[in-house]
Amino acid sequence: MTTIKLHNTRTRKKEEFVPIDPKNVRMYVCGPTVYDRAHLGNARPVVVFDVLYRLLREVYGAEHVTYVRNFTDVDDKINARAAETGRPIGEITAETTQWFLDDMGQLGALEPDHMPRATQYIGQMIAMIEVLIEKGHAYEADGHVLFAVDSWKEEYGKLSGRSVDDMTAGARVEVAPYKKNPMDFVLWKPSTDDLPGWDSPWGRGRPGWHIECSAMSYELLGASFDIHGGGNDLMFPHHENEIAQSCCAHPEGRFANYWLHNEMLQVEGRKMSKSLGNFFTVHDLLEKGVPGEVIRFVFLQTHYRKPMDWTEKKAREAEGVLRKWRALTAGIEPAASAAPAVVDALADDLNTAGAIAELHRLAADGDAAGLLASAQLLGLLTEEIGAWAEGPKLDLSSHEARLAAARAEAMESKDFAEVDRLKAAYLAAGLEVRMSKAGVELVPGPEFDAAKLEGVG
Ligand SMILES: Nc1ncnc2c1ncn2[C@@H]1O[C@H](COP(=O)(O)OP(=O)(O)OP(=O)(O)O)[C@@H](O)[C@H]1O
Ligand SMILES: [Zn+2]
Image 1 (cartoon, rainbow, N blue to C red):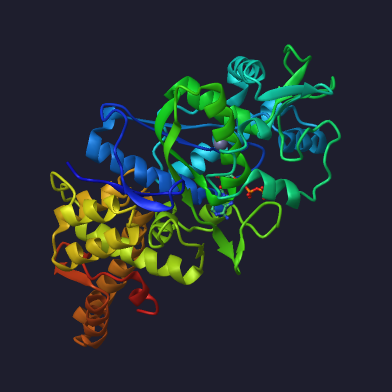
Image 2: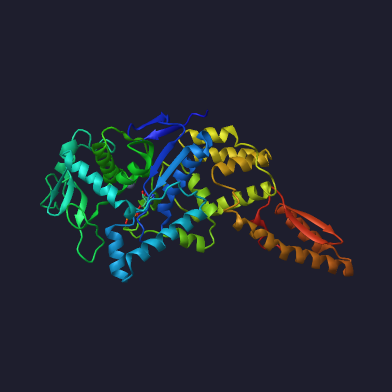
């Protein structure tokens, strides 16, 4: 069996991946807060962990992998959006959830096995908070319930390499008076009548963000599971807090064994984010005519632990490569399995750039069946996201008509210069030119380059 190596944030080392149960490999990834369209940065973790999901399915078998990604559908940002727009919260979250699924589907992301909505797990969150209070890890104050970081002082902060004492000393944020330690974080907070709320032992209220992931992952994956993923902007405090809650409520488990964090998609050196306002949505890009497959390809060219920029140049180049590969593999059955070199590259801490280099090699060797099977392991050249590449066929019909007309004219005038000029241009663009009595047909070959058709005729 292929050995997978993954960089574990917890140990800061690349480690051999050994699942708890190879018959049920379990992964949890923090999902979006649903109040707005996903921006391009939000799509990066989706694509990164989709590739990992595909690799795990390849190595352990599709039925032996369980992937959970949540939707945070209770959050102050959602409440704020509802107040701004006057729209019901349920309408906003339902609409945004569907947008997210549609957009990510266009990037070729498989849907996780479970996509829990936080509001459907409130009972489990309350139960977990009760356990934390019982065990002395949480306290009630002023209608809130807070996690007491001092109750887990030796462990808290290990993932991100911080200590409670340093953080406490550095805490400059305005500290709520009811907190015992400034680092204590909210598990439950009171809701006024106009805000979403649920009855609880602490009055009508709503959960904090961090407890959502702890409760949902416990419910669906258990007290110990294999991989926890997310963007590195979530490492602190979100993931640190998830660990504290889960390990304290369920000391019988280890929570997640391997922590994977993707680096940020940047705009001029800064994280693309809603709060900085330097973002564009996936939907905008798709509407502009950039195919989802092209976006996916551009992402995969950079290793997930490196920051990356989106550029139009990268998109144009990706489009050219994908068109070539789609032409080369048209009508071909994929090989029985992906090329070992491609699997090995992915198994080496998701070296997607290395895997793509191998795809180029397969294309250069003319191994269309191998290229197709290998690309599909990366979620590329799949049927689902290939409609965009059908484009040139339509474009070609105008070129075919032009050539047919030139030929008809040449038959009259006996001057074939224009026909020869067109034929040479189409050949140079990588098209095969088939002329018969029945008509003219242009067929893209492996070297087909749509850009070279510009200005022909
Ligand atoms: N620029 C980015 N590059 C890669 N991943 C990102 C980027 N921005 C956000 N993410 C990831 O997207 C998911 C959702 O993040 P979130 O909703 O906090 O978006 P955001 O733009 O950072 O919002 P805000 O700025 O309002 O906090 C998280 O998994 C986060 O790690
Ligand atoms: Zn989370």
